[in-house]
Length: 492
Image 1 (tube, rainbow, N blue to C red):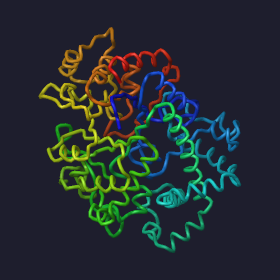
Image 2 (image 1 turned 120 degrees about the vertical axis):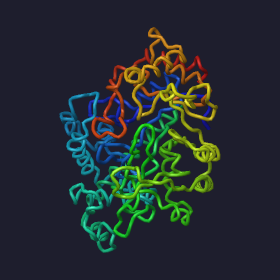
Image 3 (image 1 turned 30 degrees about the horizontal axis):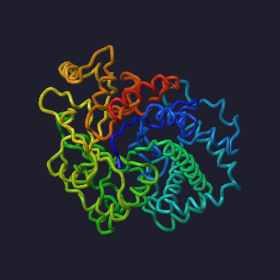
Image 4 (image 1 turned 135 degrees about the vertical axis):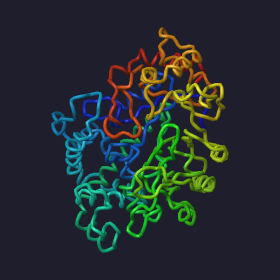
């Protein structure tokens, strides 16, 4: 149960190290130590699944699998699966503050293959146990990745018809033909989960809980959609009949066309919501708390005909509502969930969220629109909510001050009594920490006072997102003490 506390949002990729991307290695443990010194209770991360086109953690090849990029090479060396010379002179990118995903794919993945070759004859029993524990998804995922490489990384929609439609003879053929490749992808998942669970155990032992994150929808090009097509609204050729999005609003005349397949909720209900229960169960072992993106979609979701150029001609359709979460609670007991309920909310959505008992979200950067009374202003909060200075989709606080409307900036200065001596970013953080919200989260970029150059994502754009990394020297004792002091001041 979340009590009055605070935490820091920083994705795994943003951790410092010399190997091109943040991992579950030494620097991750050092960040846990930093959080302890800073009197924090939570470390929030973004989805940790394997990323596809655009490198977005919200468009993953699997909702159950982990991203091999996060596997730490030094830890593999400690297990004698790698030698230092296997990776010490490899080009992982020349900018320590940005991820180069092309170099990750071209240069890190071959190193992981060396580790796989060196693992043969070792960990056989452990990997077999891992297969049994994860049989609900692991075999399909490993097979999917092996076939994907065989078809030159094409979406499964472009595979040969027999394997696209999971013809039994074709499945048996590829399982036999690609046996070694399948074992490689299983090995990567075994190592990923082994390293992650050790890190999580260390965090929990030191009083730090992990908040994970899952998108409501899965990617069309994913093992989930290929292996569980009945769960989604697909036609006879396994093409999406309808896809997800958001309706036109004040920010976009054409709405947002996400393009993910939407769920076949009537089928899911007949199965007792088995697939969703498995998904939440998996996340409950990975994280202490799970944030579900676009939570309002469980009450009503915007569906758009497949192939439509924009989201304009979509319509609202009722979701499963409380029935899904009653089934989850019956199967798994109480699971800690944060409901991402941002955007326009109808009374039905508010009633549904309240019925689940899950806390919703407040984003302080949204509070200072000058047109009307605003639910994101701290004096309107209730205790059962989570306040953020901003999320991964927002500008940093200092970037917001550079780019927001003048009236909004002036309002924020008056409301939060901001001044340059304290620092606008620290005044913003003070506004979150001092509120009645039971949990306050700030991005590490906001504690560091960084501008838009440190922004994690600009929604509806491709390229230049999900790449920011922190400099190692920034996470120092001086900053930890300053965070500790303001956290203590507001009883968190």
